[in-house]
Image (cartoon, rainbow over all chains, first blue to last red; front, side, top):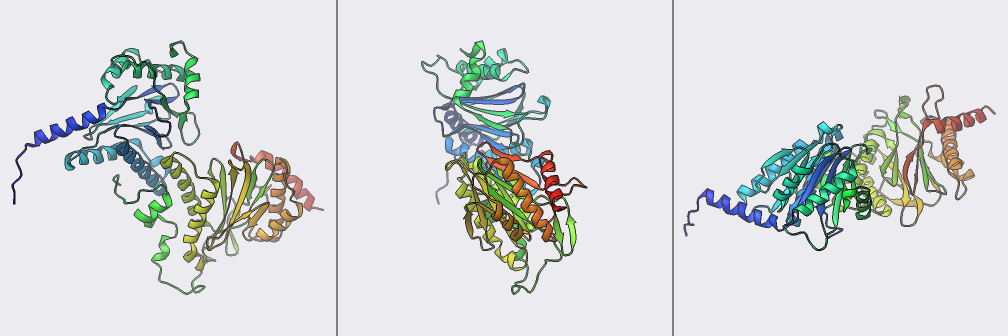
Length: 233
Length: 268
């Protein structure tokens, strides 16, 4: 029997992390911001049918960057987890915290155990009954989970976008302003602004909506709402 | 409950339960009951039964209504039970039969609709919903042999055909479309007679609501398992209408004057 070469765990983890980062950096970023009436999720997405942002449960939404098939599987697993829990207990018992932890555990286990890590970063966010009860969790490719306030960014250009948002974010923005800010921040992610803006995918968690809070905005709706503000370009 | 614990990968919540957590299915318990010959073991006197529900088409879509009584043998077990539910944005479901399994199946059906929508990103066609419900009713057949019958009526607004549609079922999961109206449950026959006599195509909303109530009042007049509008306690049937704008609950304020008129008419 051939003895495999020894590679230090340090080296293995580093290689995996680098591999995952490379995969994620290929995709465009996604931003989530808290605004006056809920949470806004925005992604640049040329496809109208392959979504990066989606509904998980009454108050919970999901966004993923990286390899589509991988975050799509995570998204579906999240919906199954939430619906099963809601069916066997009650709708109020489906919490973002426990879902985000389940994601963290799953992604973390795959990172350490499998030869190939997941090339994904995800956001799991919840609109609370009051703005103070909003929750935003960021789970990265190795399962590291962090909670965010005000805004959260995932994807290859996250650092530049985060810097832009730190400078320009203000609390209790109306929707139109939040849309314009998110779009500007996505543009700020480019080193050189693109000649042509790509299509936007926008999901909202609206606090005032009855029942399921998720609403998918169409391109036209988003454009119309942004036209209402001067920063809309 | 870890993620990826199950093996099912499709878009149906019902199938997800069947594959991965069968003990959560409404009729699962019967697999553990020793097999009995049909009719040998009946629970009819021990569990509440929900009774008359009906649906009729109208100009804008479809109206569905159900009385509020649940009966346990010769006793009234509830005066406020609800048998008509919104299934999703464009459809409603009502059930007659053993109340427990009925309510559980309605809940399962609601989650099924929502689950499919979230996983696939689009809603099922009305025919698809009706077929899925047929499969669920069929799964309940062993329970039906033990007396736990569950008979739904399913109705909704078909966005493709732009009209209301009604589906009735039998215990074996048989699915049949009704073009005008249908009523089932212990007072179903009586309600159907009234509907048959007064039904007209393309009725306006008010006329359709009045007819739905009248059919329930007539059923309650003859059937001990069905209650009419209870003016004393202020309990009115549950009535919903589905149109191209979605499902709307009819408020008690609108049902009260209609009910009063019908009951006054009974005084002769």
